[in-house]
Length: 385
Image 1 (tube, rainbow, N blue to C red):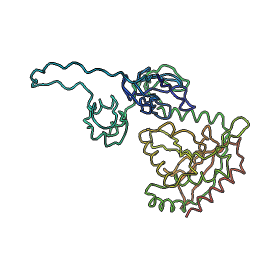
Image 2: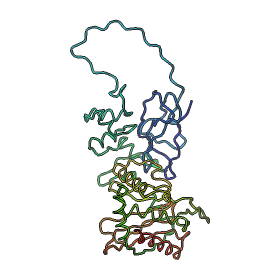
Image 3: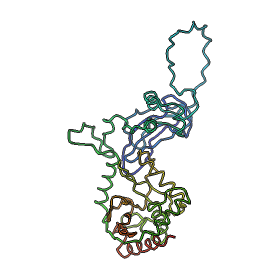
Image 4: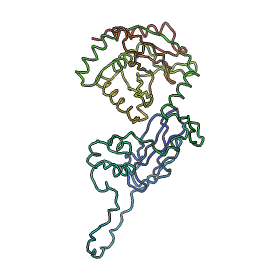
């Protein structure tokens, strides 16, 4: 018998929320089949069964689970059941037959549809054909809500959702008038900001750059790769290209040591009004422009629903913060815990000139090195053709 234990998904939380079982208790599953959806403070993650056989739930939806907790078991295949003896001839059909008791998708081809999703399909009149057109292997309630044009509902129930994450496990309480609980994404941001200001002595440096060549190059590449290529994509590429020359800018502090990174993993802020996310373009130096643009486009789509995987949001060793709307001329980001730098990119305000700023961990990097890094970045961005 195999046990499905909750893995450690990140270093920010000590417990995760079991949002939804994707496979019913007692159903047969394969080793790699996604069977349960758990939620961290940043993302929702589907966990595979980890064995082949019959799934047995060991935790309920809405429960808080710590890394290492057993939430399900997978036993051997269910024994074959002999067919029942033939039933006597059926009486004449009633003119008012009862509705079938089996779920609407049983025996039908197409994706696995969870029970909450099936219930909402029936409520909203969504058809199996519409669901199949989504191209998903597993369809959840939130997918049906997006398909029907409804804002995804918070799940599980609000009282469970308001329960604290991380070390704060106090029982939920109703918010009094005049208060509004912070959503889970903002709670994660708050913890990161607090930790950064408490532990990272940051300094700041600003360099004025001519972004005209970058904007022109982005317009050309957009047509060539058939993906949006703008300042975000080009700065990811330019910063990643400096990894070999400036390894400390991608390092982590560990006491009196600097832990160097083998490859640049560039985090990029995405905030469409529903929360700040920092998805990561992994191994960015080896990516093509088309690949980077495709990844960033996928992240922007995921930000509209919060439908990120934990690995999308983990592993950054350099962060680019985008401030390219609303006439912003200067932004000072915090240095994200686990990184040593955050680059603030603003849009041009005076023709094609923009002030690009670097916040850096002063324990690792001094002003001279920061100036050299920014000078190299300026040359790379202004030299785009």
